[in-house]
Length: 640
Image 1 (cartoon, rainbow, N blue to C red):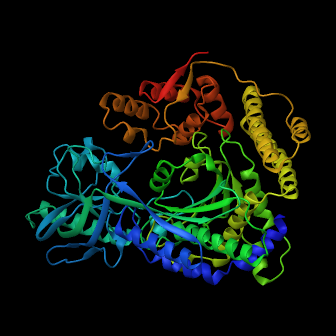
Image 2 (image 1 turned 60 degrees about the horizontal axis):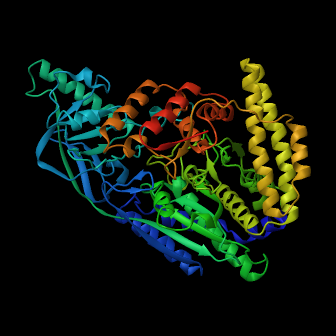
């Protein structure tokens, strides 16, 4: 039963073990498809094997121009050394990879400009190519203030060799460069490996160093205008000892055998630069500690044996999950999952609660309701000082969102309903300031206990557990319906929109309740009758437009990358993206749209269901998106 399971797991999971795991993992510079990632993967596998848990490192190709399902793969990258400094009397060191790996733009190509300086051109006119007509960028390094992807034209078309970037990804109301003057943004090139592509090198500077560099650039331009300098550009020396090649990518797989081959999957991404403690050494540590705790408890007899198998995969984000699901394994053995991503930072300043991200409506299942039930149950009945600290952890349940591997697993074509346990907002994610000292091991223990209890309950679901989840479902339906009513009042929504939101919610919860009753062997008639009382009426969607079936079997992470070798279709996709570039939550709308495409729903119905699920959206864009996928050969027509 859930309360006794939680009590046992709390005893088995120690904060000191969690700290040791986070410290060990965060010591590795673990960029996707790199030697550093492999070292970290082997370290994790060794630790798991040392706990008596069967673990291995799986090897996958990291080869240009190849795919795992619909996901375009990329080459292996390794770097031994890199630095950049101002040439001449200034001599200021701008970046040193060995001292701070994040100071290099990851996947930089090799270069050697130790003896021949390069001009540093500050891009003072924004990032549009049209603003730089007449500027000589060939053979220069760009000093940029926006995301590096916005300057790809200068590298591919204008002959720029590299970039020095001060870009720090701002989060509204959470972080600004002014608040983090000595922080480096985790930045990477993502090469397409297409014929004719030009690769470059680059470095990252802090906001404080950027201000100094901007002053020096301005002074040099003024000196040139006054005839006091031969060039308007500062000069830099740079060196990168790196290599891009067809190589390997890796995934750690660990197994706790159960009485059946039916499997609950735990996923956490191991990648990101040193230290990346919360994002995502915390999720990896939590997954490893959860498996070890369950093994000890079962062996000690404090928990009954697992009825189902548990598998943990530690992946390079997205890449590893696509590889794992497309290596010929039987996806049907995986019943459900949980994705652990950022689960243990101090809850101070603007760093937010531990969150459970819900399932998408197109993939109903009781797993999301079990996870949100556990948010409360882990805090219940504290029996010691540490339990009191766990009780004080801030938590929230939030709607389905993108951003991590759960969006792959929860695609109905993949069929592994998976919640995400995360933490948002996070002031320091994807920066050099995401270090061990900002972790709170009690927050991480809370998350790990929840994850372990979630996994064990799914493996050994009892009738009492199922009835607890049922009661929780009824309460959630009331709360979610009240949110619909409040939003309708405040935003003056049309009655049809409000009714469709209620019907989308009912359709989702009908599936949730049915999945729970099937798993626990309960009769579903009474729970569904209560659902009818809470949400009267039947979902009715107007059949409008063509009916499509999907010809791809996992979500499209990037339509543009998928179509790189198909220029005519690529042009269609880019024209569509340009038309709707300002549409709010465009990517989320598109992913949810693809989830619903099942050979039965019409394109118009799908568009309305996405808008109903999100509470906003563009039916016109979604209808056009489905037509685009069909024109690109990714959907087949179904005759009604």
